[in-house]
Each structure stands twice: as C-alpha cells, then as structure tokens.
Length: 339
Ligand code: IMP
Ligand code: MG
Image 1 (tube, rainbow, N blue to C red):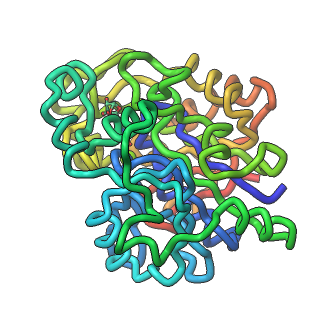
Image 2 (cartoon, rainbow, N blue to C red):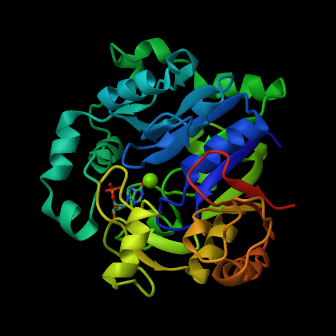
Image 3 (cartoon, rainbow, N blue to C red):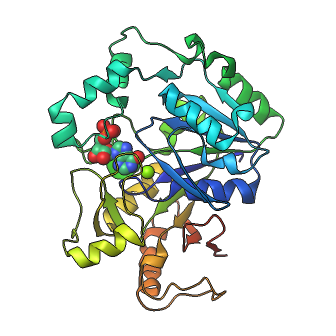
C-alpha cells in the first residue's frame, strides 16, 4: 500500500526525523506529508549540516520528493520561511488551505499560562492555544488567507488522492509519541493532539484504506523534555551526561536537557496495537555497549544484544511488527537494515 506512516513509540524525540529522511532516500517517495505543530522538532544530519525542522518534512533530503503540509498542521510563518531557506525546498512545498497560522497572540497566551508552562511543561510555541481557538470556532488565519503562504496553497486531499490513483507512493511523518497523545497518552502530561497513525492520516486528508507500512520508532531508553511519567528515571549525573552529550538528548525546540528512563515495554505494546505497527525502527543503539556496527559488523553484543532480544516481546503483539531498521549514529546512512 502506498502511504507509509512514521509514528513515535515513546515521549517524542525517538529519532523520527532521521528515519523519515533515511526512508525518503531508500524508498524514493513521490510525496512526504507532515502534520502537527512546531512544538515538535525533527533533527536530521545531512551532508555535514544539522537540520532541526519544526515544519518541513524530513524527506526534503530527497530532491525529487514533493513536500506537503496537511490540514492538521499548525505553522509559525517566520519559522517555516527560515526552513524553506535552509532546505532550499520551497519549490516543492504544498500547503493545505486549512493549515492554521499560529499567531503571536497564541504564543504569548501559552507562555503567560503558568500551569501550561509549569505543570504540563509546554514547549510554549502556542500550538495548544491555536488548537483551542480552532475547537472554540474563534477567528483564525488559515494558510489560504496568509499573504506570504497562499502561493503554496493547493487542495491537498484532491492532489494526494489523484496522485494515489496514478500509483504514487508517500511518506506520512507523524510527530511526538505514544506517551504524549492527548487521546491515549499519559494525560494531562500530553500534547494538544492525538499522536497516532490514524489521526495523522485524517490530518493529512487521507482515508485509512491507503495505509502502507507503519513504522513505530523507539530508542532503547525513554526521554521526556517535560514533566510526567518516566519509569526508572536515571538520576546519576555522570551517567546522564553521556545521554546529553553523546546522545544529544537536549530538547530541539525547548532547549531543555531531556530526562532519561528505562525502555517501557507496556508503552511499546500499546504503540504497536494502537498504530497497527508493521515495522519497528530502533535509534540511538550506539548509546548501549556492544553496538559498534560502524565498522561493518552486522551483529550486536553485550547490552545492545540484550536490548534487541527484549524486542521479541514487542514483535509478538498483533499485528506482529518486524524490526527493520537500527540506527547507530546521527548520520543519514548510519542505519543497519535487518532482514
Ligand atoms: P506542548 O504540546 O508544547 O504544550 O507540550 C506538552 C508536553 O508535551 C510537554 O511535556 C512537552 O515537553 C511535550 N512535547 C511536546 N512536543 C514534543 C516533542 O516534539 N517532543 C517531545 N516532547 C514534546
Ligand atoms: Mg523532537
């Protein structure tokens, strides 16, 4: 089936951006679609440059792929324009008319809300405030009405469905992760949207019939930039430093040092079920001992081997996903493909 979907299996920051970029090169998608808000940062190391994208799809790395923002996307125009400049991919960008503009008043309202910024740990981009206005049917600016963005606007559902009819393949890039879903996650320590595959399809304007492979992304450990549950949280300063430096576990939008905890099997099983995951992609395996695959070694030892074995239990959950990709470094091509 033609629409592959990438979802986060933890609390965001599983490395979805890197996996999306890798898949874009490998599978050469005709279209890549991104949904959600700029509170999510996807980081991609590509040709000696680091791209921290809040809105543009990670698949920009494939110069043939058209880049689409679905109706469930929320944009800060200045930020998007910076990313257009950085990626040089403006000529490939298509925006749904119903994409909502996050206005300075939304960002200001969120940042002035002590409960949101404190207890909930909001990234403070204003996404939640804009979503709230949409739910309340307040006056909003949509992409179709925005003087600088309307040139990118096209009827996305029509465009994508026509492309599907002609046999196009697509990548749908989800944001955040299972624990942060407003619907299924650890409420109230969640974001303002659902963060699962079916919702991403709806936000893109695609029906469920076209879902292809659904990639659930996991790290061998869990991080959280905000408050909320973290099982067996690591408190040892020296050990944490390794994650914050070698693992680059610093919030890409918030700039906060990420909290670190153990791999949560219950959340992984929930991710497989709710997303009907068919593939698993593991990132940051290099943070574990025994994962030195960079020199062409194709198997893991020690800690990494032990972690890979625990995934058998995740793969035993219906619909029985297969571990396909294991990322062992930030570079686009630092990926081991398991057959
Ligand atoms: P908000 O969606 O910005 O209001 O943040 C709500 C909670 O979700 C906070 O704990 C944030 O740190 C977390 N969060 C939101 N977006 C992301 C993300 O992309 N990665 C990781 N955590 C996120
Ligand atoms: Mg992120």
